Every structure is written in C-alpha cells, then in structure tokens.
Length: 202
Ligand code: GTP
Ligand code: MG
Figure 1 (cartoon, rainbow, N blue to C red):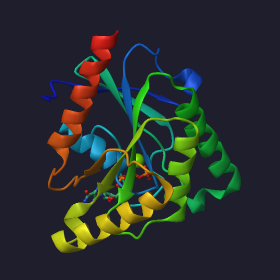
Figure 2: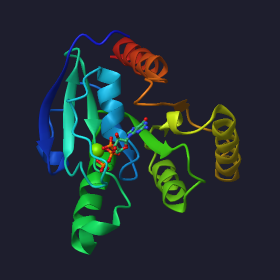
Figure 3: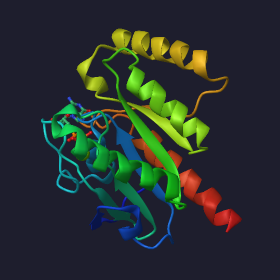
C-alpha cells in the first residue's frame, strides 16, 4: 500500500476524547521503549510524525494519526514503565485499558515485542488479557537489526513454542526494523487488505 499522506490529528487523555469512530484504526502497544512510535514513523515514512526517545516513557497520551485520509494509526503509551510511580502507572493503565476495551473502531492492535528478549511474563499476561476480552491483535517483533539472522530465528522459535503453551492458534506475526525498514511492506499490506475487507462488509 502506498502512503500518500500521514498527519497528526489529536492527543487524548481518555478514550472519550478520541476522534469520532468513523474510520478503522490500528493501534500500537507494548512495553515502554519497544519501538511503537518509531514503527509508526517508519510505516508512514516520516521520522518526525510520532515523538520517540531513547528513554522509556516518552508517549503518555493516545495519539491519532490520519493516513491517506482513510484510516488511523494510533500510538499508545507503553506498559510496564516503572519510573513514573504508582499513581502515574495506574493513570496510564486506565487510559490504555479504556481505549483497548471501549474503542469499537479499533480494528487491530499490534502488540510489539523486542526481538532480542526472552518471552516476558508481562507480555504473555497481556496476550491473555486480550484473548479473554476478544480484542483482535497481532504480534510485531521489533529491532531485528540489532541481532543476527540466526539469533532472530532462534528467539522467534522460542517465542512461538511459549505461545503454543497458551494458545492453540497463533495471531499474525510480523518482524520489523525502524532502521532498515524491514517489515514495512508486510505490515502495510496487512492493514491494506484488512481495510479492503472492512469496506466490503460495510
Ligand atoms: P514509549 O513511548 O516510551 O513507550 O516508547 P516507544 O515504544 O514508543 O519507543 P520509541 O519508538 O520511542 O523507541 C525507543 C528507542 O528505541 C529509541 O531510541 C529508538 O531509536 C529505538 N528504536 C526503535 N525501533 C528501533 C529499531 O527497529 N531498531 C533500532 N536499532 N532501534 C530502534
Ligand atoms: Mg512512544
């Protein structure tokens, strides 16, 4: 799919403040610093669209970006960030869970996982939560430029095995690098074909 335009629309502190639910949207979630905002910039081809940082805890609101005038990419705050204190963390969790559970136009939630790490409890529990609540999601392994091809396939296999302990069927799985742009065609292709299906059933 070709990206003709991508523009920032609004930052919202609660799901009730988000734009009207008229267009399909694709949101990005995952632990702080996993590369959510960088992936949005890589997909849209605009490094300045979503704000990124080498320090975790950069994105703290629900950010809507309108793509090709037809669908939204949504950048969410990360989970599992320890340094904001209990009340800050609770506020963010409320925002994230409110969005995920109430947003009917949420078409697919991309859950980002750092491809360098062993399966983490916090992510596995998050998948459980999504499954229990019927939230449609996919998995994106990020930062694949930071490890060798053999280490990547070893880690992916380990992750798949772990997921099969929990699930009978796996969601769509993607790999990505915001540096080399690997995974861009696959992710945009997936969004494009999902949009087509939505338009057919409307
Ligand atoms: P929060 O908003 O804090 O939750 O973080 P985030 O998930 O949005 O992460 P962000 O995109 O801000 O990236 C965090 C850091 O990882 C930045 O220093 C990025 O440059 C780096 N980064 C993100 N994606 C990649 C990638 O694919 N490869 C490499 N090498 N670095 C990446
Ligand atoms: Mg961010």
